[in-house]
Structures are given as C-alpha cells and as structure tokens.
Amino acid sequence: MLLAVDVGNTNVVFALFEDRTIRARWRVATDPRRTADEYAVWLLQLMQIQGFARDAVRQIVISTVVPRALHNLQVLADKYFGLEALVAGQGLAEWGFVADVDEPRSLGADRALNVIAGHAAHPGQHLIIIDFGTATTFDWVDPKGTYKGGIIAPGINLSLDALVSAAAKLPRIAISVPRQGESVIGRNTEDQMHIGVFWGYVAMMEGLIARMRAEIGQPAKVIATGGLAVLFDRHTRIFDHVDPDLTLDGMALLAERAIAAAQNRTQE
Image (tube, one colour):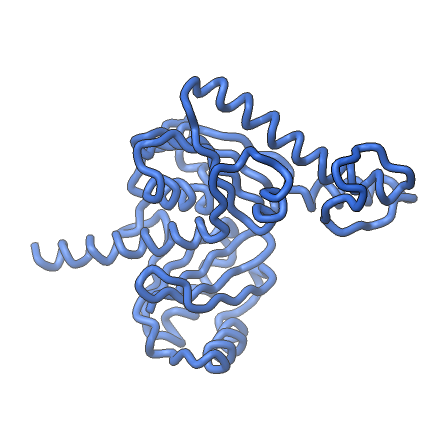
C-alpha cells in the first residue's frame, strides 16, 4: 500500500492507497512543531483501529506547502515504517511537466499535483482547475499538460475571518447556503452576511472563470477540488467535474512514476 501525506496550510491529510484506490484517510491540524513520535502515536492507532497493518505500507510520498513540517514527516517514515519517503517535486518524484510561467519554482506542491492528476484524467483538453483550500486557486493547464498560469484568491474562510475580525458587531457564522435560497436581499444581519459570503464567492468564481475562458480563447473544462467543491457545485453550473481527491490522486500518480523510474535505473 501507498501512504500519501498531503500537508496543507490548515490540515495534514494521510491517505492509504491500494491499486490507486483510497482505502482510508485521516486528517489532523497542521502544526510544524508536531514531532515524528506524535504523528506515530496518532497515525498507528488509527491504522490499527481500521485494520491496516503497519508493514502493509510499502511506499510513502509526502507533499507539503509548509516546508517546516517536512523533516518530522520524513523521520516518521524512516523511524516507524522503515522507508525513505518520496518528496513531491524532488528527486525521482519531480513534477514531470512544463510550468510555462515566470517563476516555475514558486508553484505550490498542491497545485502541481492537481496539474498532474487533472491532465491524466482529462488529456488533450484545456483545463481550469479550482482548488478550495486556505486560498482558492484557479489554474490553467493546456492540452499537453503544460501549466500556463492562474489566480490566487483568499479562501472563503479567510474572507469570513477578515470580515468578522474587522467589524466588532458582526457575529461569526458558518459557511453554508443562505436559508432564503436564491434571494440576495437579506432582512437581518446574519442573513446578509451569509448572502455576501456565499453568493459573493459564487459570483467571484463565475466571473473569474468567464474571464479565464475568454482569455484562453478555446473551450476549457472546469475541474473543482477541495472541501467546499461539492457545496458550491449544487449552486452553480460552472463546474464540469468535481473531484474532491484530485490532489491525492496526483500524489499516487507521482509515486507510481517515481517507482517506475527507480526500477528503470536499477535495470540500467
């Protein structure tokens, strides 16, 4: 089995793959100070509870947008699994696609993995990949799998946090569909906040995608991923496909390529 460890700004996701199928996943808050021993106590107990043996893990791949978290996860792989972890974007696990932008090395690991998985699932097409995370990113991938650029916008939770922290009288609300449905005129403070946050975000997405499609000048399929993709998909027609596991799928593909490259080197 493959253990994929995806470190985001907010959460770390551990996913167990078997034949490209996710068999289990666990999530913990991102904390760069968390040690390998702390990860092990938490992870190994969860694996045992769900019936997965430690020695069933034959490969580990780590992707991180938080560089300080990498070392302790590498120690976890070595100390508790006896494995040298692959690091997404490095060594045998290099991205394997062209980033046709001004600063290719600045492309985040999560976005690079989305490029890999998106192109593998939809080859020969222009893609706009939207990832709902701490930030919301929009990425253009051309039919050859080349990354052509994109947009970084504040995530919806960041936007809400900024609104509440800057306005003392506004209450903290959950991200949800406004209870008055399609109406965009609220009659109380809480409803007006829900409208502004939810429908404002939908309008932002629809406007940016329309502008991206116009600039690309050819049909582009829109792929959505991330925790809020399913929620927004119910209330807009801009998504052609929703894949909540796109980033993790990219990690599995990258690990497969790295293993194949290692075997080729051995044969040579």
